[in-house]
Amino acid sequence: MKRFVTAWPLSALLVWLAAWLGHLALQGFGPDVALAGGFAVGVALAFFYSERWRRLIAALGFPVSALILGWRPEGGSWGWLLALALLWWLYPKRSWSDAPVFPTPRGALVRLPGLAPLPAGARVLDAGCGAGDGLRELLRAYPEARVEGVEWSRPLSLLARWRARGAQVRQGDLWADDWAPFALVYVFQRPESMPRVWAKACAELTPGAWLVSLDFAVPGAAAVASWQLDNGQFVWLYRPGRTVMSKPPN
Image (cartoon, rainbow, N blue to C red; front, side):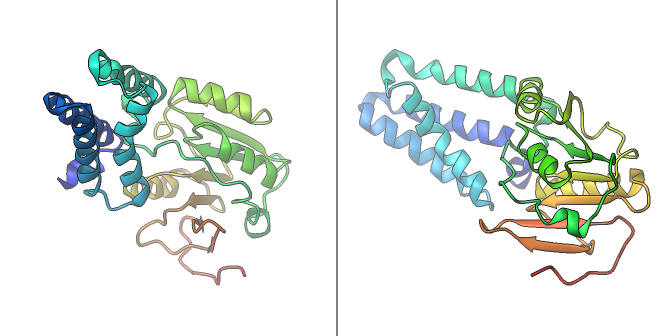
């Protein structure tokens, strides 16, 4: 079960599928019972996740897709496959081990220049830039830097390119990307991915380069600084190879 839960977002798709199968199995008891049954299946399976945001996504997949379809159980139940096909297009299988598309909050990185100053023209990377919210925050924080983003999903990379006009965005694999040229790398990954992020940063970033993570700390690594946002999320600042924890800014 642990392996199922960490296979995100594939496991969420399977929860949605199970909810729809439960819905179909209960069709003979009437539409209300079928809808309630599908919702119950999704909610029950969602509680296998420990993170609240994953529970919400898994639990809400069935009712949201049913709402989009107009709550028509007769002859329209298989329309959810269209939603899955769209998700597959936006979020191709190769990137399923990475983080889902959640935006970086506005103002989340405003403290970075004071803690991690960069010279003009320094290259900054948003590794897995999604729809471009992180890129926009990096552009605000470092207006004189060369801000770049890499995203495996082609439609999302196109959207990020349009939304973050001052950044250079390319479609590609963040894990295959070379981080050596960058003075700062920003990630908004999953907790399970952070050891891999840290190993890549230690192996490729040059001395003095920075690693920034939203929400998830690197297990066993001391941050140079960290701070909490108004919405409860944390930003973690690292310098690979540095072991001293400094006092977070007030």
